[in-house]
Image (cartoon, rainbow, N blue to C red; front, side, top):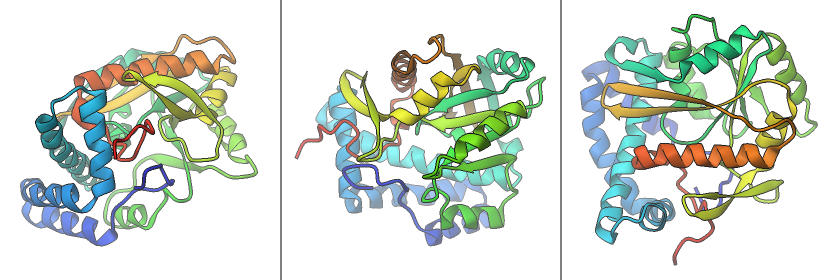
Length: 294
């Protein structure tokens, strides 16, 4: 990742193959052990990412310099764990993990209205395993994730080839805005459409709001779209608590129709709340606030 988000994540298929092989052959524990060295590698050889992470811990979380350096490493390690966990769950090892849901009634109530709903998440925790939470709700839930072509990478294609395909539909963002029709169709089927709201791409439309004490740019699209659709809007985060336990948080927006600014403010407040509880699980390794120290 560079100083600005470029629309795709760092990583190679080879790196994923190593983890998948170790996990399937020797278990999750060995994959976690190897991760100690991989996280250390990124500290020294992904300098731009590490500087951005250091700024987050030093300036936004107000850690000491030493603690910030240590937390850069710990953050890489936890991020790697979430990737391993995702692959493990997709490979049929769900029983190795435990889950709890705080606010699940919001999703149940949304589905009972039979008009779908918008989920706005962020690059914190491990949202990509949320489908395994929703499968245990009293109301059947189907998820569509709004994504980009660049995010639908060779890494995802490889993971799909070695794991069970998740019950998640991908809606690819198109320049002609045809994805809007797919979103409306998904909502008409009473599906939950998930959008991430924390990665602004340069030269696209944006809104500004405070996050952790500093103003940052956020993509305007998710909040303008969600505020215009007459369906419930929920904020959802799946956070790792221990090696084998996850906690899903769901909160409902109270913003009025077509009030994208208030919706964004509610969103940043919810992200800040989550990061206060799980500071290591901020996985935006780029100059998010455009304030990074040289």
